[in-house]
Image (cartoon, rainbow over all chains, first blue to last red; front, side, top):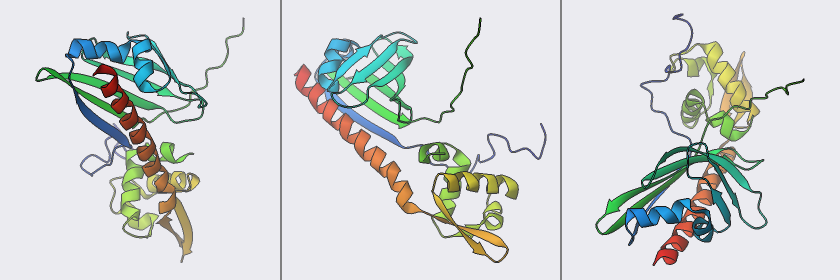
Length: 132
Length: 97
């Protein structure tokens, strides 16, 4: 390692604010397995997400949400623990990408749903077209 | 560079925290960071490009000050996204009860 080069951890030890993040949690009177279906089945998620939600609940599966009159949001499932948690990243054509995490824990006879959405750092990579 | 890309770097976020305490030059700022003055200047240029700082000549150096009105975009994002989730979770609660 070259001593003069700042390493990615150069600011370690300093207090660093994360990117903006929204977090919510909610107790629901449904067992985790039942609640899970409401989160990952597009037709059920469409009701509470307030628009047409499609979701393929598998790693790399596509996610989209179209709320009337607004630009559609498209993304990809990044992590999934069936019945427990799902993480996806998404963005509109214009907006910054964000990461959404939905997490379910047993809470008494029901479930505790934790939701977070945060802005994520990104780079724009232009891949040149392959010419045959 | 947009505000969010500018804020995606931890050093730049820390620079903003420092500037929130008052205007400073790159030299003054570099005393507080474990990186070179040159690296600080580069990060300040990125903040300038995002419209997050103002530059004013101060003797031979440039004094940077924070443009807090641009940071309000972040508060705005948090408010909007938070409101969306509040609405969705309220609907979910209705849906399953």
